[in-house]
Length: 95
Length: 493
Image (cartoon, rainbow over all chains, first blue to last red; front, side):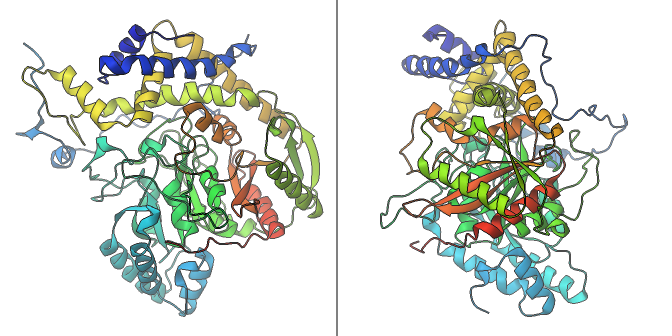
């Protein structure tokens, strides 16, 4: 499948990665090449095959619904680019 | 004792227990080798103070007789492992300055056993790459060279720094991670042993996630015995990783008898690719003959969906990566872009991720976003997961048929020159022999088995039954003994 620049723009938007307009054609052409490679999968007969969710047949384990950890506000915020008064700070979200 | 850095884990363990050498001495020798090896680009964050303290503590334990196998062994740690208060940035600009407030399960198990951390090792950004050319730190360089040329060669990827460091004797062993071949391919390119355990054998907690259903950490060592020793310490059930298996960890080293009489080794015809270099063909045939001479039964087998492993991988891995890497948004850790007047939170995300992620990571995140997007999820992602089920079924059937291990080449060529292989799809083909193993969750090991015409190492891969790393290591041990690979790179750095 050939990817056009509009699709590339939309995918970049969905992925939350800023791509300048002049870089979109090259990106679209890379996507097209990679998706062309992936399209070999259409040759495989997958009728009746369940999509694999886990390589081991074990049921995902569940832990007790109890607090195991907490009261680590300092550690949680230690690496934040901007933290104030015990919170992560970000640009205004609500007008 | 001279050349302390050339010791194996087993050799160092035994010498330290006898009192012939101390961890402090081996550690100091490694630190000095690292200081001289800047040209290899292997170590990217050095931690000599931690190493010195850990070595001193290990020497006390050894004196007291409380010394596990890994006690006092100086290691390099791949930058993908979160290490408390030490930069851990997965070779990405987006995690610049990140110092985890916690320790990954694997490194805490190693350190609890007395292992020594020399520093963090270079890698491809977020483990995405097969040549270590996507690292924000710059390339790691293979200590081997072609003949008398001085062309810089790749150490492979993504665990390229780990591979270079072990091959160049900067550390006794290193941690690696393998999502599509990232332990086995670099191990083959530098002439060391690299083991990817069964999915679920080693906890993924605290390892920066790339593709969670494929990622698995393992040891990169100078020989098979060391892989067995180090694996045991890395393994075990971890309640913090819900996919970690709650099963016993055997003494892998005790399984190394070298006796493989009567074992059945499968040779899959689909791994004989068009255009495969004659040297790889010959290496594979030689390896087969060695196992046969050791008493194994050689059996031709078929894994019919092999051809579709790479395209399935390049749907599943980017899909999972796009989801895992969504957490890098400039809010909680790492880099945040400078914002212009009027920029809102969406601009903060978009600019941060455009600045912080390199081109290969951006490409894969966007491919993953595309294959998961409305309208394409079934056509790409679900189809790839169905093909994955078929790939696993191929292996299940072969093992059910009595095959104990499968022998294949590890890589389609010897190490190539840095910058020589720039097309993304050509680059993906490096993992053609290794990626099936991740899709099926199996254990696989790369063992150095010969040199090519230019004097570069080549590896063979053995694939084992799930959870039977002990048996796999024993077959690898027999192959290693027969191959007798002892070559080392000539020091130029």
